Amino acid sequence: MKPYKFQSKNENDTKNFARKLAAKLKPKDVVVLTGELGSGKTKFTEGFLSYFGLENEISSPTYTIVNEYQKDGILIYHFDVYRLADSSEFYEIGGEEYLETGICLIEWGELIQDVLPKNYIHITFEKDKKNETIRILNVESKEDLF
Image (cartoon, rainbow, N blue to C red; front, side, top):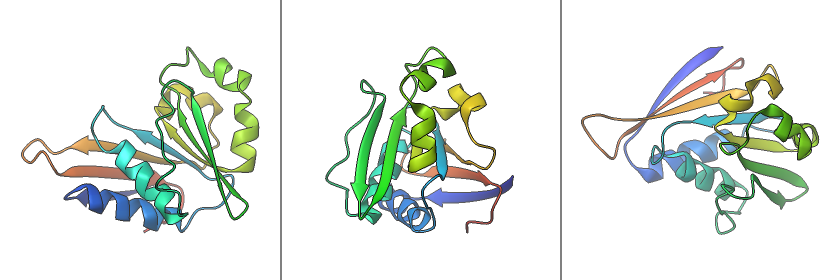
């Protein structure tokens, strides 16, 4: 994995970073978002969807497991798998089909790691201990994205 570290000074930085990443992705790409509550995963997703003009469509998939979006024939799936007992539940909701047809953003994806493709992008969000508005995004990918 090729590591990349991004320091976000505010929510707009996080959204802009997500837009830049979204511009580079295509169907079958998977992005796993890891981090404690309030660390920036939702703001990242807002920015990601805004690249496709879908920023007003976002809602949390916490209780529905997955939200589906489509723009210009591109399917985007936003998962929150925190409530899944294990990866078998991901298969039960048709997870393999999602991975094969669209761009997938998966919050808490480390919980279903055995299901993920080998070349997924993993972003870990950390809160800065000295400044509450700063977030550190640690990106791991097999490709150079930035």
